[in-house]
Length: 232
Image (cartoon, rainbow, N blue to C red; front, side, top):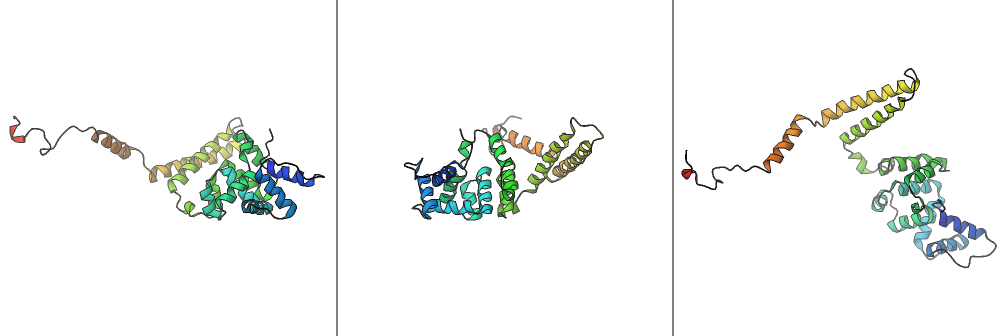
């Protein structure tokens, strides 16, 4: 099975360079793309839009990153203004992720991305996800990012980066760098505890809520027997 997500485009390029026109096409969208490449026009406006995006290397890298990050089409549309129908067509013609069997193959594709301009963006989209692209393109959603989330993610990242010292000598540069990362992780853990306390009060409140749901005591007004009839 071919792992090239641009398989349809590659088919069209081969057909265009062939000595005679193809007698049949894999599907309608490939046929429309062939018409567009060979004549300069076709009957599908989404195919034309998708090709326009592909031909500009900056746009191509951005579109590849959005698709590989698995950002919802509605969010991509709102962020960069590309209609959903054109997004779907681009995915079919130029970034068909269904060819990948697992995330390892997607990571390999990202690591081998030929365009120097887009390589960093595509790799970040695969490894970090949509949040990186939201930040890159100035989404207002990032402006409202929860500070607790920032501290927590930085803490976790710093902790695991600190584990890189394993297998290295204590006096090595890697070990020294690991100490710095762990220092960051500890500081962020302390900050997180200050801005998001999780100890006594939270535990007490959760216990109180739980017990409140099972409370079988009654006030004098709620008592099943009149207070005057209760023996003392």
